[in-house]
Length: 57
Image (cartoon, rainbow, N blue to C red):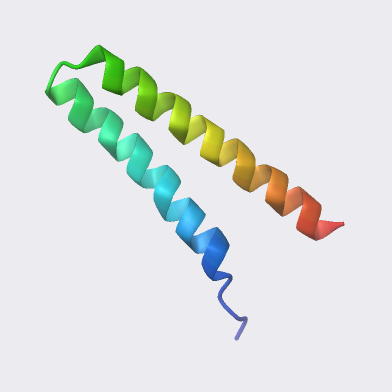
């Protein structure tokens, strides 16, 4: 069984939680928070992809 990469797991959970918070912000009809959480979610996802590519080389 492979070892768990905890930093990447934490990053993935953080990205999913950002997109869940977008739904919460939509419920509260707060456009500022919707945009903020979307940008944070995509930024964190991009950072995770960058880390993954760097670790594969």
